[in-house]
Image (cartoon, rainbow, N blue to C red; front, side, top):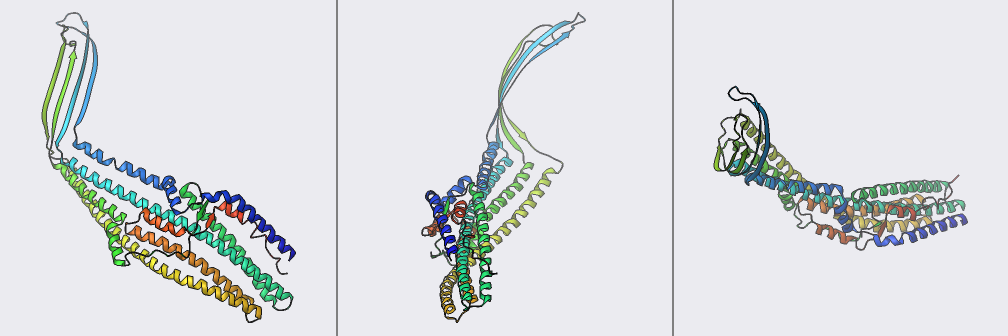
Length: 477
């Protein structure tokens, strides 16, 4: 007992020192909104989506350029040197210098293909904006998933540690009872087996926690000093309205992926019209002004310089007659792409409705499951207390107490996981309906207001160093 006392004392001192070291980091504890804001700035996938949108938005001014005038200035200078003979006379050297410049303006008056291309660019920009909105929804879901995965993993550590400590106490009690003849050696061996298993589960829980922190760090670039945990007693969100068909109908019309496919459908329809417009004539207004100069010509014996300045204004009409069937082929190709866009739109609508149905059901069932597990935690605690009393008076054996403890800790762990899963499913339901917004993250964040503080892995490992091995009773021989 003296050795065990010192082991516990050493573990307590390590806990105190680690807590003192980690105290400055408490001010840096972040909640869900803090993590989300940091992810907006540092998540590379979100940054990629934003840059993709910026690039896609340039399609509109590029298409608009096909309807606006084009102005070009050209110029040149030259020099000719030659030996020329005139009327059989001896050859003479000729040296002629020249320069010219020309300013030309072309204003499209009728180019239907360019008009349709501008309309098509608008559909493509709309598609890119919906893709960015989808990326924003995915960022919210990824951040929330990573955040709550860390909380669940930490709860797993807490449950594993609590179960290990409880089994350790039961192991010591079983040994004392065995030594005084009040219990069999089977009880002691059973308790030792459960204790070893609890130690292994505690190690596995910490490994899982490290993996979840690494996933959060992958999104943010750096891991927070600590996170605020969830209050398991908080009221879980419920779908409003509580009408599955309303959610499914909205998802079929407003899910970002559906809107992306609608924009793609419009772009494909415009492509058909643009391809057909290649059969249509084009009419441009042209205007030019320029000047040219030459000091003479190599074909004339006299150096007679010329300088010409001219201005031209006119209309240019072009009527396509035959292009080898390329235009008709492009039209057929565009029609096939439109049919594909129609199929992808219907697939997106079905997927959105299915996602809404699944999330709605998960939220409703998750709330019911959490309520049942809250009751299970209370009854499991009562059952554990009764089994401990029964073990002391001899009506229960050691295995009954161990089973009751395991049931209690499993119920606690399942309750916390059910709460986080329900919260995440509520966010997925709004994402399926296309209504997920920052306000929803803020609403979920308020559920962590009364939660505890979860330290970062380094602090957590420092705070628990030695707790797995410091209080290990000697094994039965």
